[in-house]
Image 1 (cartoon, one colour):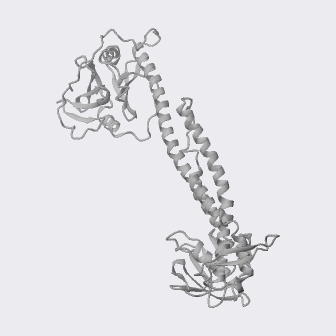
Image 2 (cartoon, rainbow, N blue to C red):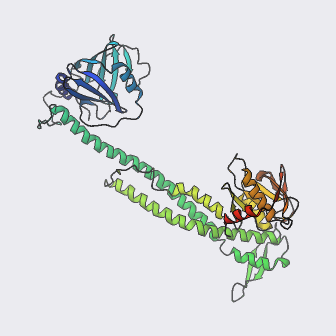
Image 3 (cartoon, rainbow, N blue to C red):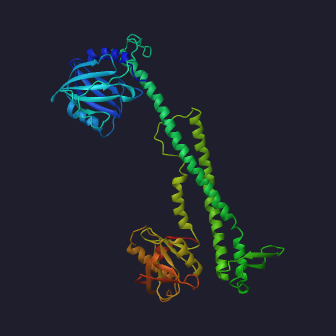
Length: 482
């Protein structure tokens, strides 16, 4: 609760004699709605605090050190420019209301600092000698240049002698009422700060608990989808063993399941629009999705659920009133799972697929397909439109992809590293030299009606390379074992 008019009258009466013959030697604005005047009087320095916070509007001397922002706020800059060095002529309460005038003599002439300590409408205003408003703390639009008029408020004064909130039994301070007010509001603001911190933290926790729950649910859904692909490796192997007996257009095939000791018959669904090889590739591809999901999602779900339990426990402590803010700076959220998703995705890309993987001399990732099926999956599955695509010119060989950021150019050494790998994993390896074509992945299209790995390329460039033993040795050292 802000100071009442009666309380303001008492504290002004206590401060007025001490401020006589004083001058403003320093001005600070440590918080948005708090201004501190350091006033030098003969033999002593006082720190006069004005608070215009709706719940704690007040004035008093303070001994508490309050940290200031690195850059002064605009109102503070104005006060320093016009009031610093001013002599204090008088401080008085206006008509027994919650308004205080601090009359000053500045190098520019007489002026008045008006403190309206009126709760929600609290404000600090600077008036010139003519009573015109020069600036106010609230930055009220179109107020500057207007004549100041004392606002009319309902009178709710308490008896001047009744100040039960502030005990002045201790006479250690020469300004016992100021000391009592400071102690009262220090405690009140500390409690308020804890409550505010709790509310802010609770809001953050609820937001991220909701996000983390959705993320975990999505991971469970992805895992469930991949779970049905668990047996698809067996389907792929059975189709592979019977490719010669399958014809395009079949919707299913009945085969002997030699993975089962009893050798039962097994009906395997087929995509009638695809040839036997395409159906086999589909089953193997879906099985790899199952393996990737098992490898990536289960640990992620476990960690996510652990983090969720921790966040829920912290939220419960806030709701039960046992939570306290940490003394050290807290991270935005201990639930680092969400931020970690991006990092996991990058790691997954390096592990993704059965492709050979190398790191160029510039630190970029280079993928190399091992066969026609992998070439197709690498180019049209893993690669993004801005990635660089390479292939040995005019001869069978591996597709090579260099992972690039959107809009970035390929470093010359990385280009030569990738071209060397394209040459190495092609039929030109025996000759040890040849042309390698390269272009952005977006200019590579599937060749219709052709076998997997067959493509058409536009806007390509060509680079002649030779197999350099030193370069190959470096690439080998920087390769991922497959």
